[in-house]
Amino acid sequence: MLPVRRALVSVFDKAGLEELGSGLADLGVEIISTGGTARRLREHGVAVTAVSQVTGHPEILDGRVKSLHPRIFGGILADRRQPGHRAELERHAIPPIDLVAVNLYAFAAAASSPDATVDGTVEMIDIGGPGMVRAAAKNFANVAVVVDPGDYPVILETLRTEGGLSDRFRRELALKAFRHTRSYDAAIVDWLEGGASQAPADESGSLPASLRLELEQVLAPRYGENPHQGAAVYREVGGTGVLGGFRQLQGRELSWNNVLDADAARKLSALLDAPDDDPAVVIVKHNNPCGVGRGASLVEACERALACDPVSAFGSIIAVNRPFTAALAEALAKLFVEVIVAPSFAPDALVRLGRKKNLRLLECPPFSAVKGVCELRAVDGGFIAQHPDAAPEDPRRWTCPTRVEPDEAQVRALDFAWRVCRATKSNAIVVTNEHQTVGIGAGQMSRVDSCRIALDKARLEVAGTVAASDAFFPFRDGVDTLAEAGVAAIVQPGGSVRDDEVIAAADERGIAMLLTGRRHFKH
Image 1 (cartoon, rainbow, N blue to C red):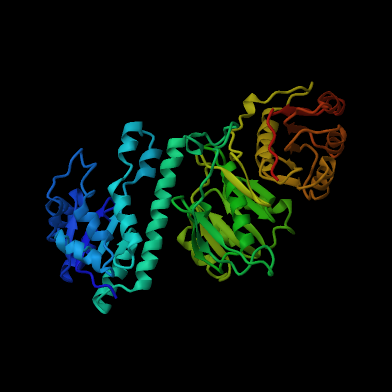
Image 2 (tube, rainbow, N blue to C red):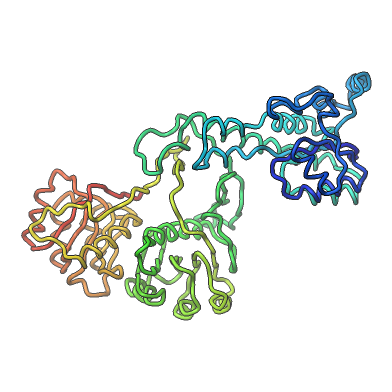
């Protein structure tokens, strides 16, 4: 056990500082500190020795140099198991430091600020802090290092009850410290490279020459896609968290498949949440929408979403783009649902949903593509990366090559179909009216087969509906198939060598067609 008699406390994040300082002082620990940390501790009646008193030299260069001194680093780095080290400390009158509580300047926050300047960001690159953290972590055999304010209570309690900190505990703290400095340095490298952190989310240009990932496990599902596969869910250190930093309000633990489907449902609900959009309900099964509806209320939107494919809705994941209401909870009372994703839940809705003890309720902030994020997918031996498909769509920019032009109601329906289509696995055909999906054909190898499936699954009236295709029609057969069933307008990217044939087919059938100029494959 390592007794703590002398501690160096110098923190940018002041959370828990008063409790740590008071607790150490009550244990008779001498506290050495710098600048703002020392002032804050003194304001709360904690006696502090300034680093400048220990070094015999004032802080200089606007605080750039204050702790970089042998009387500080000697006290941290001395290996007290070595007689020669102990003798040198005595010869130079350097008392050893037993505990280093340091966290670093908030560089990542400063670099990502809209008002950030180069000079201002450079000043947020900590030098002495990482030096002290790394020195203490290297010497974990003799020193305890703490970089996380969340660890202060357990450190104080351990010192009170056990009189010191164990070897194992110090090793765990050292590991956490090195992870902290690794993440910190990676953020600086990313900023200096001007790579992904400087690129708009929808940029089609080059990606960084190198990527550094630091992940920590946050969930351990019972298994992966299948029971014979182990699984884990990780969050990016320093990021907002999985699913935007969700809170699970009730229900069984999330499965690996639940997380994937909840992510798909949340992202599609965000596509339906423009300022003028109505409440929307998204029903997802196996990473594809099986019903999407919108209406004057969530209940009306839900009824419309369910009408598309009530069979597939069994055991689904549901996401909404408005606070979840008790009325919607009542409307879903008889449907078996695995997960519900919402920005918030009304208290009376939680009471009603609480009757289904296994139902997982996830409170998630609305999804929005983050500037500079790369999407990664694992392949054998590495990863493939891309910018997210976050490009905005404006129906006013779409072109009409057909003799018949869509009316305003059809344009609204085509816009709705296009948004749902971009969240559906390729090849994707989505048939809708203005308020709900009517039929969805997803993930087929042939586009005409996707057309047929979308029509075969339609339980609602197809005549007068519209359809969206996530990529161009390679042949006219898809247009013919949709038109024969009564589809009145189609939106698609265009760009096929047979565009003229496809457009001619629409003209022959007397239907309207809009070209977006952009495809939305989703593999």
